[in-house]
Length: 454
Ligand code: TYD
Ligand code: MG
Image: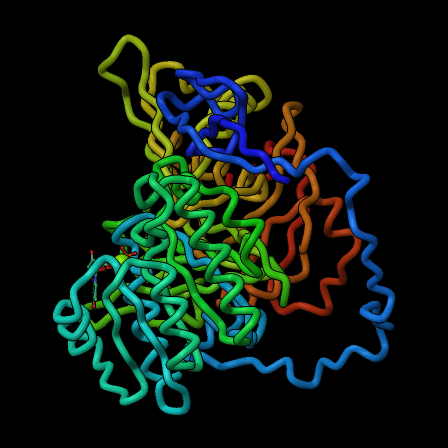
């Protein structure tokens, strides 16, 4: 016999404990502990039956994968992130902050998918009327799209198994609930159990299900980290809400690489694919202005050029202000310190503002050299050559260190029409200038880089 025992569980991170806490010992959130019932199997193993599953063991070779169908969504950026389309029977989690465009993206893929397949769009967030209005705005008028606005997860699964749509979309998991579970929708238990239920349905009926999940302010999928283990793929939709560019990123994918990203732009008529993100990020660059430099950053396997801008101005405060958007604040502080110590520049009485254009963010050290050049350019009010691009990591000694994927970065710069490329000298050794039309300049420390513009 199984016996039930009371345990408490954090609805943010899933930490379990025998007693209640005001503050979760694991993730540190306050007031998140809820009572959950758990079944522990009985200890009397003597009564356990002997189950032999030998005939269920399969040889790798005899497993049939021919029916591994992928549904194309018609949006290349989305297909690529999924690893080539939506896999039959898979369950995909699409996470993102509220209002970022998850529902918009999913409604848009229905237009293409609907030509061939039937799609059940289950919404717990909007009324059927609201969805229709949005669909009209997005020019989605396919016959294959069916709307259901309920939140009872069990009823939804029963409906799926009786109506057998080809694809199901659940928007969002935080609104779904299983009536037998007492906790409110969006709580850890509800989210986990609903996800399990949908997973079971997806696998047993071989119907792919896309689930929308809102993320909280820390960027984690609200409450349930647990969902990430259950689903086959986790995609995050990111971007600044008041900017138009959006990035779709894979965090986990059982059917493809996690190094892919998709870039979109939010327009009046929904999301548009951006096939050439570098061009978008570089459009409208100012000419002959100091404090700006372009760098190349890797987003997964994709090189993307981004413009960095720095403004160093006389400070009106006793402690000068430092601000950074799209680039790590501490990293900027380190680069300023290195320039002061190793290149004799002085920013002590200057406010420094750094911005990466287009709401884009640079999450790797390859942007260091461009930041240093921007600081230099702004400090002396000396515009850099617009056709120059720079990348390299800066060490505390002022040295410029090698970065990964150098060839992809240089190629992208060349493709976008840049004329000279400042790279770490170490990286230059492995390259041949004759292979490129862009001029490659190797530097080993920041002073050498600044000398180029003297
Ligand atoms: P939505 O898809 O509802 O976000 P989510 O489902 O992630 O919560 O997106 C809503 C935002 O997108 C809203 O702020 C308005 C904007 N938007 C456009 O700019 N253009 C459009 O065509 C649509 C439909 C929405
Ligand atoms: Mg929505």
